[in-house]
Image 1 (cartoon, rainbow, N blue to C red):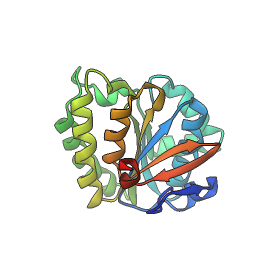
Image 2: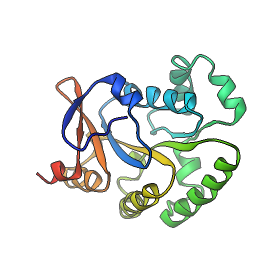
Image 3: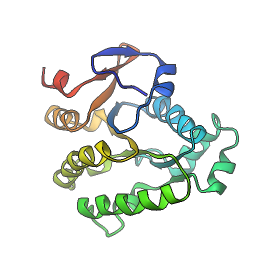
Image 4: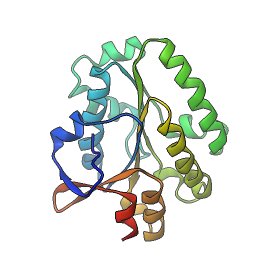
Length: 202
């Protein structure tokens, strides 16, 4: 989708058509529209490419809103839902099943889910989860989880976008999040930029 290994202006079509496997990307957004600009075509491409999709929207975007936004672009969305090819979760049901965020539990669940999904005949897994909910009480576990996901995605058929509301981030957290992703998407002057971890350090 977004990935080049240098800073570039990204056209919207490229975001859909050039998503490689084994990628862990951060999306910094400032509004629902920016979030949906990226994630709707991202999931549309995944569904059309026989990929299993998991979407965990932010607190500000309810599950039904996310489903409705996707259905406006994916006309046969109900077919994919009934087929079991896409799951959309409230963040509390996905990240906080135990009442608290346990990074090791989440990572273990990823391994189990992958085997189940591949047995069903899907080619790979496409995930988007929002971490804005965990910026305060779960920050240490959250950043550990982000770092661990890098090593998992490197050797598994998984594509992942982790989204964060940039208005809720301090500079040090932006830097830490950017450093723990293979690339980051940021909208600047009306266009999407892809930044490498090295560019964040600069």
